Image 1 (cartoon, rainbow, N blue to C red):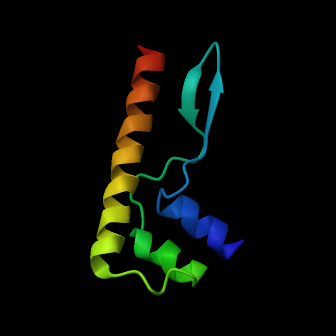
Image 2: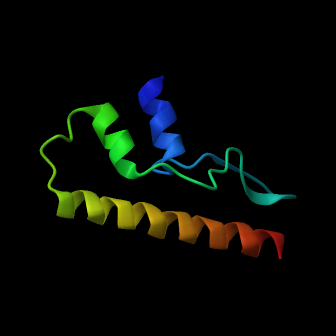
Length: 77
């Protein structure tokens, strides 16, 4: 449970739903996410990653969140 919670709290995994009437909506938005390192540490198997690799993953998490947020705005527009 702790690992799954960290995945959501860091936006590594975003919880959302889609309905034709309402479009795409976050079911558990995280406005002030924890750093992705919190999730990676909880997983343990990512201990070997370098700071540059972790930074790259963090950037992708931010990028993916921005993309999904755009989809929510389009659906509600």
